[in-house]
Length: 250
Image 1: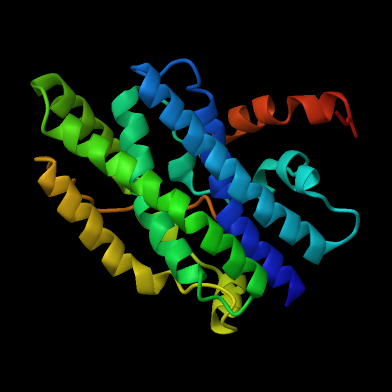
Image 2: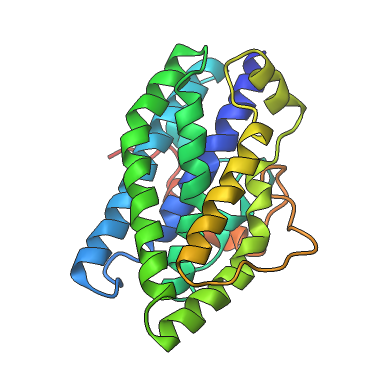
């Protein structure tokens, strides 16, 4: 059960890690100072949560594992990162839509994880809830401003939504290990959250005067280790220091 628990934790933490990395790329490049700082702070929130998850996973895993080895020294196929979080910072509209789609899922997840029978996971979720509620409010507010703003902002955010919406369903992917942890009461059965998720994001999309994309097939993968073409480039940059200077310390 310990290996299944580690597998489950990585399924949450890895998405936070890669999305935090993506947001970190924007530092100094926001459309204005306030928004630039907000995106940077969201990135820091995600990294803070990641540290808690990885520290717990490392303690369960043993074998001299640490938060750093889990973050920096795994191979691409060993990460359980949602493909949505890997998507590039094409423009501000893409950043906001990507964040919006993830935040709506993330808030439902941590609100449910608070009730975990695993005291450590419950404690991490309790600390994260307030942060994620802010993230959810920030991204949905910006979705409204862009969607119901100028003709140009509306066009750009609709284009971003059309391209990113296909990755939303994969956020709820679960395998046998995830199901076992959820059945034991330590994890969350994501299938129970999916209906509420789509109801929430559809309401916000329509409120932003945007059109819900018509999707015939949602993109799969990510949490099963099968990633987008962007993942390798993200890891190359993120892992550079640890792989160039093994066992480095500050």
